[in-house]
Image (cartoon, rainbow, N blue to C red):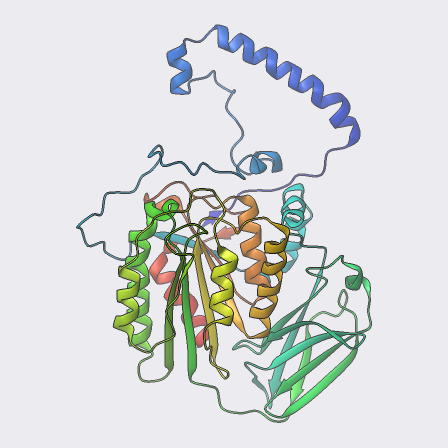
Length: 432
């Protein structure tokens, strides 16, 4: 088991900022000057220094984490550990990854958002203090999946979600507004399923705990499963894209074979870059033809991009609204494979908010796969997206030795697995 980066940073007091910090900076400058006089230029170029002068490891402070927010996007090969795969068939089972489910460790996630790092990232994406309500829907002792669950405030629906295979749905108050509604207690929860509706009133979002609702009209589980891959194919993904392609091909083939006789699995592969590139979004519709999807994945190359952010918003808009997702499904999974955030323009952030809400209301569970290049703010956005839609957070690790370095996520202990095995495991979990 591995541990993610440790975050335990209270906001600095005024005295610290105005008195202690200037003195500390002055001392550091003095030490730096002395150090410079005692080391040759070749030592500096090699990054040598005296014992005890190294920077703190990632995660020892929120400010160290903030320093990682803008990773280099140059074409330099410095630090790159990938191999030239031109003309060589890359085998699956090489990339390594971990998983963290914030919905299953909700109190820990709340504590993380109260740190300097968490607060800063919430502000970056206009996320406000919010409450979460877990709703568990059953019928005759069995979990009810794909039931529509609404959170209503004074007659206005503020969040809609659909239950998963365990009959659980997650509702959020004030996630994308000023937080005022998160303090109120007069919410209603409405459940709609199989021509039956039920309303529970006077819900206290903060103190409710899990809300259990039992329905009379159950039905057989749907055999429909929709699985979509949305992959960033900009130039910065070059260090891992060929390997990712091999892993995704393996996952598609294994899942299709494993469930061939029991489920109606539809697959879709979609790719995106950024404005001014050869294409912004390259979508392919849902299909049951596995070989077609494998061919679409194999044909992709990493090019374009340029700046750090990419057209994540346009890729999600196309994925959620321009594809015919099953109206009745056991699971709708959207794997978002990327190494960079969307652009931070206010209108794009607003669009991201809408898209996350739309995915939740349609039962599309966003499961990010964070690749090398993801910074701290991007990690938090991806985790918000996963939690808000009932998904989970996946991230590539350095254990494979492939690609540029990967940000160690701010999570607890996690197990490192082969990416293809982990993806199959996650799909099976949502399906079974």
